[in-house]
Amino acid sequence: MSLTQNIPSTLREKYLFEERGHASAILRTDFPQEFADIIDALDQFRLCRSYVVERGGGRSSISQTLDGLFHNKGWIPRTFNVSVTVDQTTTPFGTHEIDEFKNGVGVEIEWNNKTEFYDRDLTHFRLMHDLRIISVGVIITRTHQLQPLFDSLGIGEKYGRSTTIWEHLIEKVNMGSAGGCPLLLVAIARGCYDPQC
Image (cartoon, rainbow, N blue to C red; front, side):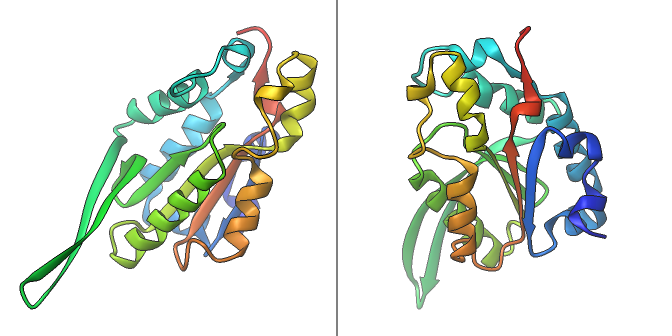
């Protein structure tokens, strides 16, 4: 089945979706509970006006809200310490943190960070997939199509084109930054916006 068949039409009205390596089919077939969790979290999420206009600093309420929706379903932040041992000599490859992890599926949430965070996320997914720790990587970000909304709220300068937006993510994915790791890519769009909360 295609991505369009795997993602409910109600969500396709609120988000942009792309995939690599048949990620949605793998999720639906091999990880049905995790896929249901992702679909449900996206369905419940609202891009509240109060979250959008709040002052910066620390992890935003938008990211925290998404974190909470996953935590309620048993997903946890996960840090992996990776090293390689050859002839009793161990070489550490450092720690690799993933925002949300459950049963071989990793989710990264990038609302308004520097674009270098995409490089980190995709590199982690590639390495974790090569080590057979992650079967599918998911990145939730935002589309630049939200910029007119931010401008209308008087906060356009807070959300620039140099930050983590869908267009930069797709560019990096198309350059092969995730290697062979299947990816489900999600961008928060205008259909998620709720001016009442």
